Length: 376
Image (cartoon, rainbow, N blue to C red; front, side, top):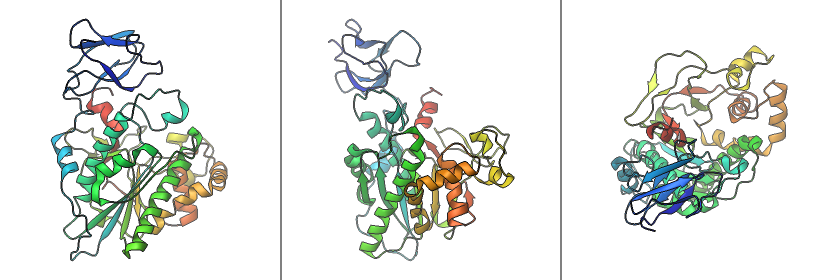
């Protein structure tokens, strides 16, 4: 074929087949696609590029050079520097008593595909390129804004659990020597209704890696930050300013309400509203619930921070799932979402008063690239 087009990763339900649903456009350096959507690459040293977007047209023509400048398939200079920066393999010593754990958890998707779509669609995946690239973007932000943002003498150790068995070498490559423990396995719960259970179990297993390393090295962590692996950070995270005696969640602006104009912004990222509080009804619908349940049983579930023992307790949501689900129904909350189960765990199991913070400015990577690529 003149352009040497090949499929990198399929995004359409219909099968992408060279010569049938995609191919070179005459002798030009372009391709055509029909009833097919995904990421392609032409011969030579050209970057990958999307073709078949925006959805809805019967056919598309795409230039082989259209991948240049794509915010997803091209790392920025800052991201490249963050991933390549030398870091110490041995434990750092200093005057600060603070040592922190960054717990990465969950399943990787791609820039156009949610992680859970693996569970409930007939998606034909043409490769792992999108997942690996998404991890590199996220890892660059974690390293820059958490690991490298630690104050002099402080240390951040990274522990990762994922439901992507193929991802182990990607994590090793991205996080390097600061990755102290890593476990990657096939998903245990493959139902959309059990996403919250899957997330809680992943947090618990990342925390177990942390506790095993702490016991082996005889170290004590001041605080653990558990965050979705596919979260992109856009500003430094000052961990030692977070309360070390309770659990901290994100302030979140409920999209259904008017909120103060406080935002979290960074160059090249969407502005993220953070301060208004959401009620259960904003996400679970109207229901006859007690006023304190309506007001207090919703938290944002992209990250949490707290003492290591409290963060490790999130595994109980998975191991005692039936009890949490039954109690959720008693509270009049029909959806088994992490938003509500996390709040139940804090109020009724840990029996503590959480704090809320805008210190972690995060966005799910897929949504981040919907904005930066103009597909929002």
